[in-house]
Length: 368
Image 1 (spheres, helix red, strand yellow):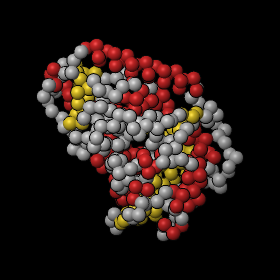
Image 2: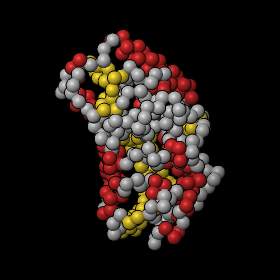
Image 3: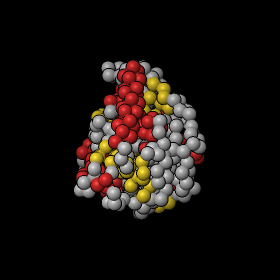
Image 4: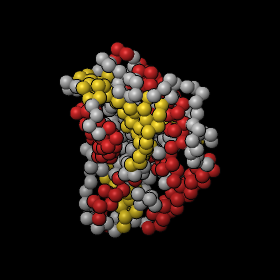
């Protein structure tokens, strides 16, 4: 499978492909990648994702902040810790709710900095944290879309519970495995995301680390569906503790059946598009497009170009994908098929492209 999140200076259709498998636990409903690719390969200098530069990410973080606000109200915290703080977009929104805020993220390895008089950032992994990192123990720990990237999630949560203050609140956001399966978005199973949390597997984890589950919420507008969980530290860690409440666990057969349908739908879409015999222009150079191409078993060489408004992507290429990324232009739109190639931005892209009256608009998704 090709890597994602990379924008290359030269076309690369064959190199840098890595074997991958998907493991699934029938007992707790958790998904996990079979192979862990070296982080230095996945997050090399070509990996440029920053929260503030992504409309999807900023909108998602805004939603996350509102969830926290709705639960904690006017409560003030002594120390907020964000796991995977990226460019501190969320920490800045939380600044009014704490005396001190700390973010950790390995993207800042060797580049610790003070963002303002309240916010400090450390280039660390969770396993590297200790008591000297804080003046007081964190009483609010938040994380948006980080734990899907972490290898040993149980050990990392144990570490966080250990360094947290008594009654510390946790707010965790992760992609929803149920949403991935039900919407048949298998392009969202990829090398960067090692863990695939279902409602049942997160409940199992919360119980196992000795915390009290409080609530959860769903964001239907982010990556097709992400899940928020909030819980409280309230007891010593019990390695033998397991969930006693009954949860609906995804059946392994449902995963396999939906994957086969997904593959067939992609092949049918390819045949239908080629059957028109018309110029195809892609709209949106999304990070996940190489995975769509991979499952379609095509380098998308039949797309003449891919339009994107992000200047950092213009003139570059996605791994495994043939067409060059170009700045959006209305030229030839009325004589072309516009293919939505940024699936998670389908709604705003449809609204935008309708103004230009393309000959046809094609989406390979049934639900968006």
